[in-house]
Each structure stands twice: as structure tokens, then as C-alpha cells.
Image (cartoon, rainbow, N blue to C red):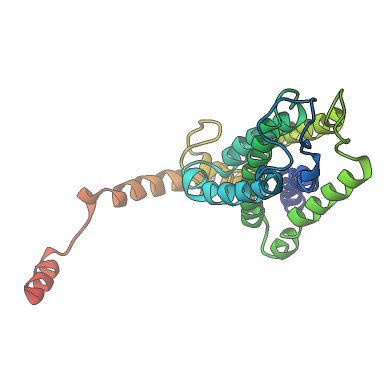
Length: 264
């Protein structure tokens, strides 16, 4: 049961890869940008300008920015689940931007950049999370979940067709993008039910005290150990707090003075 719980958590976290796969297939079509002389939208961005060749490239730029931003700026400071929820919101903003560009093609370009940021960040956070919650015996196999589900998203995108050619009524197939939006929302809701990493940031997802300790017990799959282990966690927290404070260091000052004298 312990392995089954970890597999379900890994599948829940990796499910967003299906939408990333669909998005990757969508941004392969810079030809959807309007040609010069079109009167459907009013925008300074036209098919013969530099944006014509940069629209698909901006997704890759956003992916690099998102992957770099996901590590030091957010995930190291907050819980990985909170980081995934944040970039789920970024993905939905990008989906909205490319779904309803009724007055400006510049919105499509901005949407592709935003989608790149969300996709790149989640592509960095989710595999790291899955690897950390997986048991050693299935850790290697669980690492293929994210790319496998991403390919599934590409296949679904080809099967259902996420967009139509621009016309006077509607540039995108809104129903498909709404489907993507709902899947991302379900992923964000599912994050509330997957375990927190025991060694992650002290900024708790639910604002609970000792969330790290409870998540460690949860990952062990032995909730009956709570009463036994919790006093030990309390002692460890006190000792760790003492060690973090320089006032509690038992420093051998005479050794420091000897080293200073040697270099002076």
C-alpha cells in the first residue's frame, strides 16, 4: 500500500505534463499569426515582421526563464507543492491569453511566453518532487512518468486538434483550451492531497505546525508511529534551533586564536 500511495501521488503531480505536451504542440504553428493586410485583428505585429519568426522561439525563452526561476526564487523558499500551484496559475493565464486574442495578436505572443514560463518551471519542479517521494526501488521507473504523460498530451492534441485556422469568428478551438484549463485546475486541487517533502521549506502549505514531521510519517506509511516519534521530533527541533543560533555554539576559542596567530 505504501508503494501504491506513492505511485498515486506521483501520477497526480505528473498529470500536468499532459497539458504541457498539448501546449508544445500548439506553439509549433507560428503560421497562425496573421498575414499583412488582414483586418480581423488590429495589431502592430504582422506576418512580415521579426515577430513572425520569434513567436515559437518565445516559448523556448519562457521555458528557460521558468526553469531558472523555479529553483532559487520560489521552490527553495516555499514548498514544492506551493510552487506547482503557482505555476499552474501561470499556465492558466497563458491559456487564457492564447484562447481569446480577439483584438490583438500581441496577446498571442505574450501568451506563448507565459506558457513557456509555466511549462519550464513545472518541468523542473514536478520530476524533482516525484523522485523525492518515490521509494528507491521504483525511483528510476517513476522518473519516466513526466515525459510519458507529456507525450500523451501531444498525441491527444493531434487527435482532437487544439485549434483551428484563424477565421472571422474564432481563432482557437475554445472547447479544447477549456479542457486544458480544467485539467490544470484539477492538478492544482490534487496538490492538496499529496504529501509534502519532509525536508522542504518551513513555509507550510496549510500553515500547520510540524508539517515536516507529519509528512515524514506519512511517507513512511506508518501513522501509528505519530505518538512515538513526535516527542523525538520536538527534541530535534529544539536542538536544531539551538545549533542554528551562534549563541549556542560550543566554540573552541583557543584553537581559533592559534590559527589567527599562525597567519599573522
